[in-house]
Amino acid sequence: MHITALAAKSGVKNIQWSLSFPSAFSSREQQKYALTWERLTNELANTTGIIHKSPDKNDPTYFRTESLAVAQYFAEQEGYDLVSSTCIDMGGGTSDISIWQDDTLLHQCSVLLAGSQLFSQFIEMNPNFLKKLDPNIKDIQVWGKLKGPAFNAKLDVWMRLEAAKWLETKRDRFEEDPEFQGLILLMAIGVSGLYFYVGQILSVLYQEGKYSRNEITPVYIGGNASRLLHWLAEGGEFSRNSEINALFSRMMSIASGFPDTEELTRLSENPKDEAACGLV
Image (cartoon, rainbow, N blue to C red):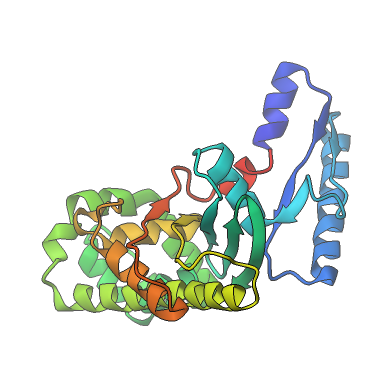
């Protein structure tokens, strides 16, 4: 709708949409997704008078996986090369991974390890802990009655509205809190598992002769759940100097069998918007 409003304001009558989809989508799911968007754009055209061209599902320029769109974002919007790199779109339910060498895609996949598994499920098990973190929450009894997607949606609202300020002003107060330490430990183990998986992929690609470098890669992470890395960093702000980088690099090294070159993780400057920026 934002694009539609801009188009109307500027007098544009014809728009080419760009779409991304999770790597885990089957061909059937891709087809259904494309048809859904085609119907939506037709309805928008009837409502606004602006023609929205929904991309053909076989057109790789405008219809591609989220892992490819995110990689394009990092290359074009933030200026990181894809000479040897791993790009991850960490969402609520899945993390979409793409591995690159010399600007060529070597492998892409989607794994069920993302925000829900790395954070939301732990808070859902003990919603009173969130009240401990933020006494301003008044309806904690309601939180306790929600399950699964409903709970995740409510937690996502709190994360978007309050988490950044909480990390900046209150995180340090809980550094020695046993419950908080337990949460951070579980999150660190989960994210490290994702890096271990990437290391295993690199090892297999190397054995198959598709990846020619005897080394791990830097990692670029975007997506809504990429913000969780701030929870793992002292001061509540993840950066190239955060100590947790050493753990992630070490996990990739162990899984791949390559030397630990202390590769860094870089977070997106526009969490959750990368897939769109990598297409439009």
